[in-house]
Amino acid sequence: MSLFLVYLAGVIGLYIIIYYNVIKCCTCKSTAVLKGKTAIVTGGNTGIGKTTALDLAKRGARVILACRNKRRAESAVFDIRRESGNNEVVYMQLDLSSLKSVRAFAEMFLQTEPRLDLLINNAGMIGPGRTEDGFGMAFGVNHLGHFLLTCLLLDRMKEAGRSRIVNVAALLHRLGTVSFTTLAAHRDLVTGQRTWDNFQAYCNSKLCNVLFTRELANRLEGSGISCFSLHPGVISTEIGRNMSWWLRLPLVPIAKLFFLDAEAGAQTTLHCALQEGIEPLSGRYFSNCALQEVSAKARDDAVARKLWEVSERLCGLS
Image (cartoon, rainbow, N blue to C red; front, side, top):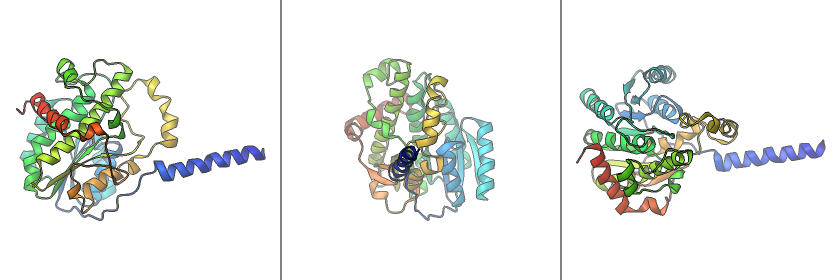
């Protein structure tokens, strides 16, 4: 029994060391007050998006939850208003799998909101299917929808002066690839809909997020807008809700033990959105509230530029 207790204590001790030194994220240390500023958080009704929106609301910002599901978004608005004491939290309908919906959201926002200081492109998904416009779901939602949304709102952000765009990517961008031949043939960056294809499509879309941020920073130089991409950590969220149940089931105990919760997962997003003095790092990638290097594929300016041009055509911007 004593040997078992020693073994158990060792396992617990090892877990604590790993958790606090590898898994657990740092904390955003910014003391920024956002009274009079406006922020959009896509996917702000759940997970790290909701936690991000709550923090911004506590700092006094007007926060727009840009979400697809009206019932869940309105519930999140109620929760955030109650916890933050800030009634300037509202829901606006946005379905990133529909370019028509993205355009409608942007039109409504520009008609009703006089300024935009923070755009947090947080929403993401992994799973099969096609968007309303026929693109692969992960590519269409995680990259193309956010690309169009950002482009449509840039002029309003320039009017605000010092503003920021934050794109939530992932460490898995390192496994991603961008094949423009595949995209032209399949309206997607993968060729199938199998489980592995869905995983690869997610990795590819996260690489697109990093490349998009890089090219965006080049195009916005001198505009007063800075932009950042980030890895939030390995988070226990609902991002895999579109996966098959037999794939999700084994992940539940692993997620509970080893994955970050939403509060910890939102810290790098908040760091990129709020930390003073990081504007010269526009276009760069962060993890654990610190600057990190990206894969060689994510530093390819030629691919980043071509992805922008192709995305413009796919969205009907050129």
